[in-house]
Length: 252
Length: 293
Image (tube, rainbow over all chains, first blue to last red; front, side):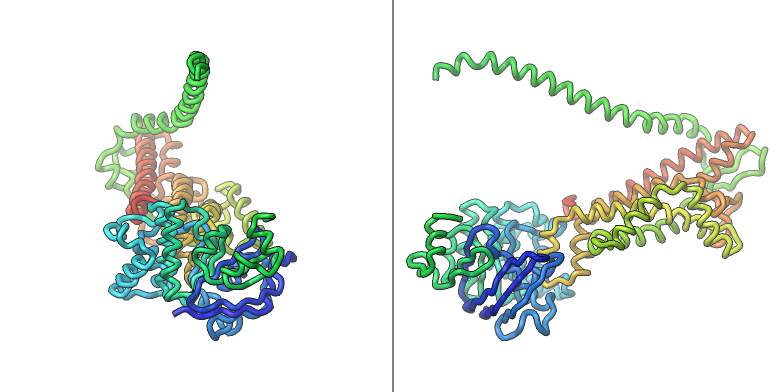
């Protein structure tokens, strides 16, 4: 089951450049939350703070508190432990090129020392089924490399890989930006189904996409969160002028 | 569109010129390949012509006969070369790959730059000097010329090449793969070994084979480390024969039979190196899925 996320006074830096200013946000469990905003506004940095991927960048720094469910993401947890509970899907599909489809999906478990073959088989099938890829690849999961799939299939493979470790939260950083409309449609359908089990935070440049998949939307600008509300409200009746300007295409 | 009918002749003229330059460029590229490959083919052909006559069962199974006697072989030198190269690889490959991993994944600092610099300098040190170093640190201490000393000298020569190629190959692995592994909660050390090194395997192996092939033919660093031996020896702390040494000794000797054997030895050495490289490539290719990497 998904858990909620509570962010308080989050500030983040790259060296001396401050990328995020005082972000406060409550993400509802088992809902999809979209983050929109122009390039460089900090939305990717923000979700990379949620699973502590931000700190893998040299000289990057974070302050503030993030609670995933009822545990603190930064205090008393190691980044590795945290990331096992938070799946991430990246902008460009990044399957492991030397691994078969099966090994790609099983990677999270196998690389953490999990060996029970029977259970792995089940997890791989279940994860590929939830990412709507099983029917397309079931005959070749051992024979084909993850890199031999099409772009859209690769992205669904990456989603399956993230789901296989049974996370509580799924972070998606512009998961459709490298995909064609048909693959995008499939992934959006998927997000709809996955909401039942996971809390989803999705960064997107595509405002229609935010409107289609997310119940809540946050608008970021220059490292600050300008507005956060129900998606419907943000797109029909935003309370901030800057949000309105952005969604009506007056700048950005 | 009425104009379209007038256009084709002009197009044809352009494409003729393009065809010509295209063929010229291809011809240039092909001829450079031929020029580059010619010496290799010539050397190999010459070795076969000169050496194949003396290559027989005795050459591959017997030890050298005393000077002046016809016959005998280089079996002990072939075995010695295999022994010394095995020691060199066992010492040099793990150290080189380990240092390469450090430089690529953790070495973006002053210490890393120092290691890079030292490694590049070491790469340029004459092989005879490396022989002296191995003499000083192994032979003088053991009070023996030995296979171990020879292997140490070769390992020192292999390390910088392997280190730098490993680093280059690991840096080619896209960062998105590292992030994908981190995102699954895989610890950093595991990511480095199972994802980064795994993805770069074929490139790393190429570097290892380059270093191996380069030291396999080295004579100078073995002169006063392995020293050479006219008899069988399997002990690591005793003077050991090696093909390059044996070729050197025979080539400068006054005996015609030894000259012929030197040619055969050179041929065997090249065949050994080529087959070792081919064997490793084959094994690695079979280990990777569908030749993806």
